[in-house]
Length: 89
Image (cartoon, rainbow, N blue to C red):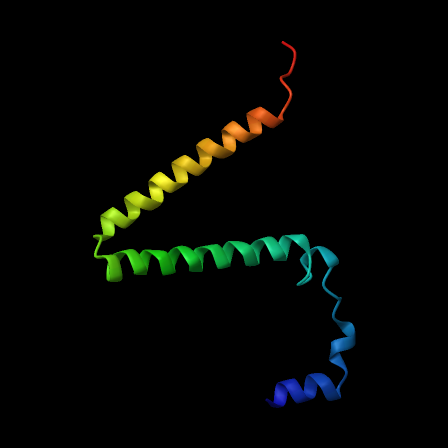
């Protein structure tokens, strides 16, 4: 506590460089990181629901997420191929 008070009273905060806009809390990078953390918490919640409420074993929950990952990759690949024009060979 005393270190913080000294930091303010001695105006040591003036010698610290501000955070660049790229690493600011409202930047695209930090918003993306926040979305990834929210996704991981949602996956954890779903895993808990599948194992505790539905009664699926842990390996079954992992299999569900593995299949969901494979199918979402397949769909995203098909969509990206449909939207991208073919390159001349």
